[in-house]
Image (cartoon, rainbow, N blue to C red; front, side):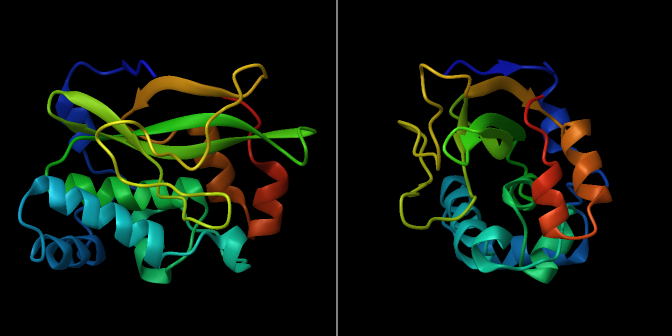
Length: 197
């Protein structure tokens, strides 16, 4: 898929903010531990991806009622939905100077009766952006780190109103962030996720 870079200044995709708080001690410690086991930035990026995908359960899969949205909280509490996990991965990658953007998809659920916005990231390697989905694998979902053909959790149906949003966001989309921050628990969040951007 053709990604559109919103900001020509790559430093925007390395920035820290209240959500992608990669200067927080929890993020720095996790990044340092993963970096210490990686031979290069590619190996680090793959390790960070697999760490978030495999060791932080998607809260809908695990039944965790807590809502996280700040990267450091996701890492500390070990839970989050796709958006929160994308924030955590972005923070870990930016902590090691790997430009990382937030990306979104519009996906159908409940046999196509409803839609929701799904969150993932794009990393910049070899002069190009590569989308990665750290949502977490389960039966029917097999997302893998790849700089070649995309290995995402979901592929929008071509002949439907599902879609990939082509924008590379340096910060979380305001609509997504507002809903995450205001949700008292995951069931409330689930009922109020945006259905489009």
